[in-house]
Image (tube, rainbow, N blue to C red; front, side):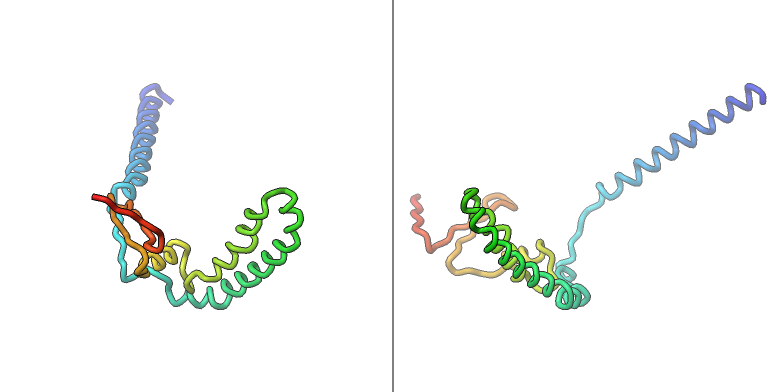
Length: 146
């Protein structure tokens, strides 16, 4: 092989490497530069997720909640001795039963969104700076002075 052929070969390899690298960079940057558009009409659980959640998810959540309650009761003397009864109650009893209350077929984010849309006459929502907001429960004593 001549020196000229070796030089042409290394130039072609370098050109291919540069082209492949630039293509990879362009492919990974494109989603970052794209605008994210959310179709609110398509937001929420689908028929399939509701069926799967009804047939599989909710029964497993019920089993998990009952098992968590049993584990909490068994571990209660030990968690009282260890001083972490509140943490055990939260993780073994409260969270599994709260998960049962999630809307059918919803992800946690969808459920949080739907619950945030429920109006409560006892709560005043003050939008400070999007998306920050202050929630004041009017059952509490709140004094506002000018």
